[in-house]
Image (spheres, helix red, strand yellow):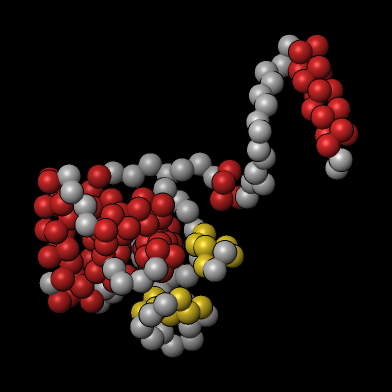
Length: 175
């Protein structure tokens, strides 16, 4: 659309708003919205954030942000699935599911999280894992890889190797 025509359309829209007493907001930029943008954010507890950040720290600390968020999304997908428990903590602690729970690394990660939270000084690794956890807990199911969005809502499993994997990201395969 040419600039002159765009200005005409904006002025006409503003006039209609004024004429009918409708609220009218102008914005210098526009953004296409997606299903993800429109979705209401899920509220989460401090405890859920602590557990989610810690499991991401254990499982994906060395991965890209997208890889970290993908791990969090899998935990949330499991929580929403009838095949798994329905809380973040129960999903993480379900018998045989996450090796950091079995080998004690989750316990250590929780201690690291608690210490950093108390000192209000987050390491870059923990800060990135926490950001990924927040987005997953809020209900995001999309990651961005190489500038492209990837929908992750169908994945319930990840590992270094997953038989029948449908997607690979960094050191993880997802199914």
